[in-house]
Image 1 (cartoon, helix red, strand yellow):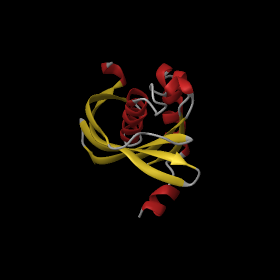
Image 2 (tube, one colour):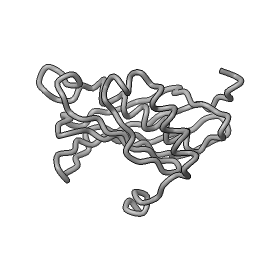
Image 3 (tube, one colour):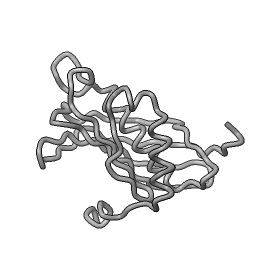
Length: 151
């Protein structure tokens, strides 16, 4: 199933809407993160390794790891929302399972349940070195769908 999900793409309209919203996020731009995959209910965000996103021992900082996980889940939910809606995180919890090392880290947000108002997502973050991926963080998130007129 993983390979099939990896191949699936959201419609061009949804991809454009997600990318446009992502580009308005100052933090993601500041960190140097980029979206690498957009599918219905699933988004991947990569963050290249560089000194500005590490902690004192050279691992990716938990704040950077958590930030891209939060955005990956938010955009995964956003792919399933109507065009006139926006998304906002209500809460999330993340467990840091191992030191985050690699050329880059990759966050994967996957919708578990998309409701009329609330959506729940699974969050995973992998340390990537070459073609080797290692799970470094796992979490869950709740998001709320807002109408553009209600913002």
